[in-house]
Length: 174
Ligand code: HEM
Image 1 (tube, rainbow, N blue to C red):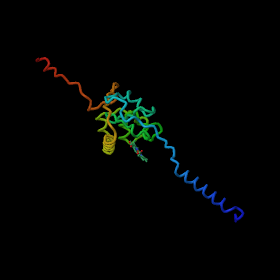
Image 2 (image 1 turned 30 degrees about the vertical axis):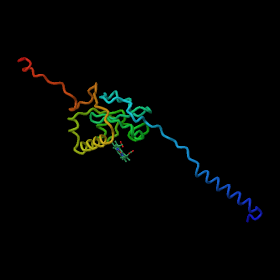
Image 3 (image 1 turned 90 degrees about the horizontal axis):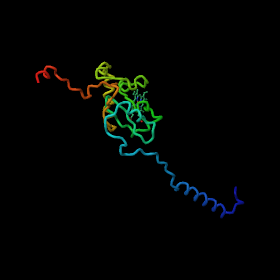
Image 4 (image 1 turned 90 degrees about the vertical axis):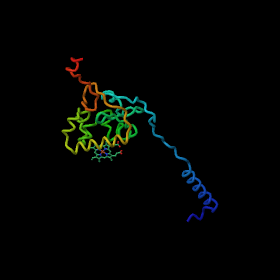
């Protein structure tokens, strides 16, 4: 069909195409490296109040992401795609997710919902199991930053250190 093209020209075109394809295949692609969070924690391991962890809500790049569950604060920064802005579980970030996780709820009203050992005992057995399973999940997967210390006494938990009660009779006898 293309008899009018000299054989040398056909070969030249073929070689050109082969060289072009080889270049496309062999040229290293530009690798886009997503921003990496610092490996070393940028926060202190200590107890935080619920209002203090609010700023670790995954909305600020470079800041860690915290979630409080039953008095423990977990650093979930490793899963920023899930807990950072736009992530499926971003709503838990910077918050106490205890009641949400127990009730399998995404309701705004359940986020930071006050709870106590007593209120947890009032939940159904299934909900208590669900909560315990989540606690196990988070504690196996994410580092614990510290405990919740709440200046607003939102969380009334038996784990909290108690002020020793002084026996009035004993005091008088001393
Ligand atoms: C239709 C219902 C649901 C579907 C289809 C679903 C789907 C998923 C999927 C695919 C993952 C894995 C995500 C990943 O590894 O990035 C996941 C993880 C998770 N889900 Fe759900 N989910 C549902 C309901 C819920 C509910 C009701 C809750 C709690 C209120 C919940 C809390 C979580 C949590 C905390 C994780 C762990 C994320 C992690 O740290 O790796 N999910 N879910």
